[in-house]
Image (cartoon, rainbow, N blue to C red; front, side, top):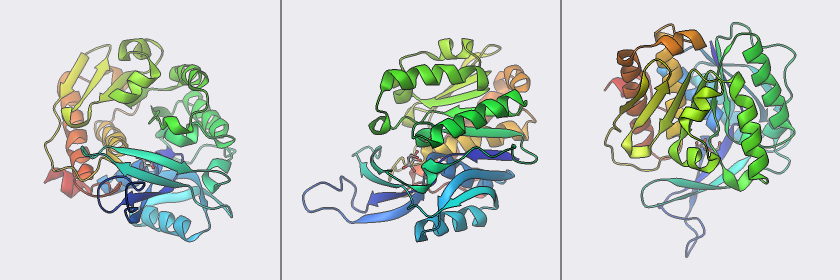
Length: 307
Ligand SMILES: OC[C@H]1O[C@](O)(CO)[C@@H](O)[C@@H]1O
C-alpha cells in the first residue's frame, strides 16, 4: 500500500480562463484538490492500493473530499477529522494553463494534523510534500512522520511543490528541505521549484535520494540516478485546459510504475535500468497530459492513460 500524507483542500478555479481578480470577477468553480490528496486519488484511479493520511474538516467540503477518496478506493482509516473549515485555494490560470494560488489557510483543519502513534499497517511507500510541509503546527508532524517512515525502512518520496506565497522565510525553508533529503528515496520536483530552491539534481542526488525526477511542463520530464545518469522523455501534446494537479498525477504515476516493477525500495530504484525508467517516465507523461486536458485536478483512470 502507498500512503499519500498531507493536505486536502478546495481549489476555486475560474470558469472563464483567467484571473478571479480580473475586470468583472470570473465565476469560480469548486474543485477537489491539494497535492497529496490529488496523488492519493490518482493512485487509487490507476489501480494501486493506496491510503490517505491527513486531517479533514467535518464541513461539506470535507465530506466531498472524503467521498472522492472512497470512490477511488483509497483507504481513509488514517484520516483524522476536525471541526475547523477546509482550506481554500483561489486559482488564477495563465494563458498557457499554468496556475497560481491565493490560499485561505488560517485556522483550517488540515494544518492541525498530529503525527499518528504508529505508521499505517501494510505501508510500502509514503509520499509527502506541498503546503502540509510548510504550515505549522502540522508541518512538524508530517516531518516527524516522514523521518520515522524512512527510519523504519519505508520507501519515502517527496515533492516540495513550492507554493511560495505560503513560505514566510524562504531561506529557512530551503535549509529545512535540505535536512529532509537523507530521509527521501525519490525526490520529484518541477523545474520552477528546482530554480526556486536553488540547487541542482546532482547536488540533491548526492544528499540521499536514489532518484531525482524533474518535470518540465509540456517539455516532458527526466530522471537522474547514479546508475543511469539522466534519462528524459518528451511531453505528450494535449489541449491544455489547466495544469492543476499535473505534478500530483506524475507523483502517483511514478510510484505506481515503480510498484509494478517491484521497485519500491531505494536499492531497487538505484538499480532500475534505462529501459524501465523510460517506460515509467512515459507513463507519467501520458497520465499528466490527461490531467491537463480537463479543469482542476482531475486525475486519470488507468484506462484513460492507456488510451
Ligand atoms: O496543494 C496545493 C495546491 O497544489 C495543487 O495540489 C496542484 O498541485 C492544488 O490542487 C492545490 O491547491
